[in-house]
Length: 512
Image (tube, rainbow, N blue to C red; front, side, top):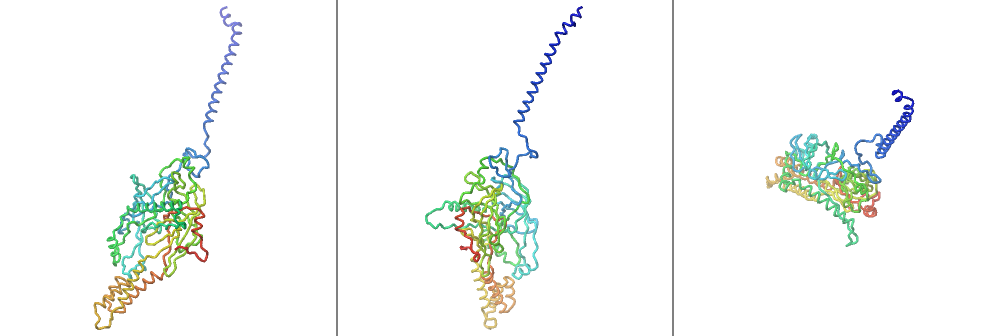
């Protein structure tokens, strides 16, 4: 009976509603948990932006200047690209002895990556003489006739290591640009004359100050070169006149050393201030440091030929970056005249009319050459409008006068006269031989007792000097690839007034 009371129909009837309540409670709890999980998943999805398919894991590199504000994770790689030239000057004289001989120089022009200085002036560069080329038989024979039995050999130079001032040493693979390897000087254009006296043009004054600054920077960079004194130069000149003499590379000899692999100096963030300032119009009178990427020669250039240059140093307007390193300038040849006979020298004039930023954005400009680094032996001159002209050194008058004097001495005296002084006749022949073939002529003049031989040698030397300095073709204007230049940016009207293209019948600048 007790068992019947516990499990009888009355107890079973009361437990059924209890089981239904329990099931409903469990269902509510399950639905609540599912809702909470769904909300959490939705919230997490809203806070995360999915990456596009194929997107790189690392921070993107700036490819083009964005139209709006840059993203916070956008960066700029500070890389000196392949093909960038380093301007290296030998800091002391080197006597050529063998292939593999080490050489040492310094960087004399700063190298930038975008807007950051990465290789300062004074950085050390080491290398070696990779090869000493042989001399052809014809060149050796002509040199022997001129009393030079050790003609100059062409050299192949290889620079392989860069040492920064902080002690960091960077190995490099490089090649030397053809046409470099000479002592270089900075040539600045003359100042334009203002037709209104007493009126100072702000742009012209800004350009003049920039040219002076560039000249000062060049002088400071060349202070690290051990320039020879006057006595040393005289000794080297006398030594070079001997029939057998060593070969030297002069202190200050400049090489354009092109990188064959890029140099990486990290990266920097692209700030909103930096992005918004890039591409603004350069202020009138600004001077841009650039390097010629297309070689020019007045002997082969034609009017209308394209001229390209690469900006090597960033241009700032106060603290605002206007042009980063790596921008390009496009232009053309507007006037050209090759060298001609009667010692008339070549002339060349070109302008830049387009500026291309690293991201491809283009803008129109008018810019002319205001300064250039040229070989000292080229005797280059720039006028106020950027026209380049080769000049002839005034020493040609002295050299020709000496040759004519030696010819006159060789003719003097009568070889058949009995009262003629034998020593005087010999000296006349020696002087005449020296005028013709230097030391070889002097030796022959001393031993060949012929008056005709003496004045023939003297006449030959005088005639050769007159022909070389006054009759032969003059010198052409030559700008090798990677020539460093200073380019002034002005208004279109101003440049058109001062650099007017000539007619087809006259391709010579108004101002030589």
